[in-house]
Length: 196
Image (cartoon, rainbow, N blue to C red):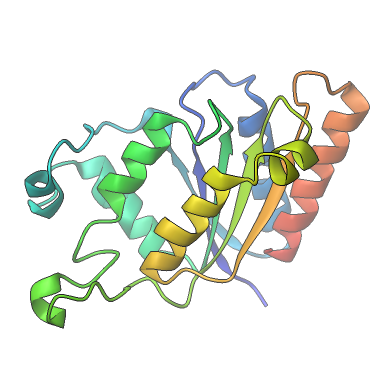
């Protein structure tokens, strides 16, 4: 069964040689070959400012690029979020993007409509998070507890109703030889074909 898929490229560097970009392209290739519809959101190419206050978070949206990203996310049934691990978490630009996108009225119902509760609006969507890192993936998961990944899952995606959420961790990126890089790309392409 075909799906509508939005790929969110979270690497802040637009350089085409970034491995996250190759992974996003591999997933897209597989998804299109599997008969899925795909839209791509390149966070590094968007124009928006970071939120600096609660008032800004509640204010009307002022960035057309964020509005288009919201439209793509609303359209999608499945989200892929790809980013490199920086200082133990997602890059600041991706976090800023998510803060802009996940505003009341889009990701959660405004509190005045729910009696003070923030009811999720993005239920019915699934997600896969793909994280690249310099350390071994098992070390990030077992020694560091994958805290930033869990925070993205629990405090952002599940908070707005997105589940189930699956993970793909790709470790030792800088040390990978061509064969291992090709294997990682083939894995993402297979996941894309399956719409998973």
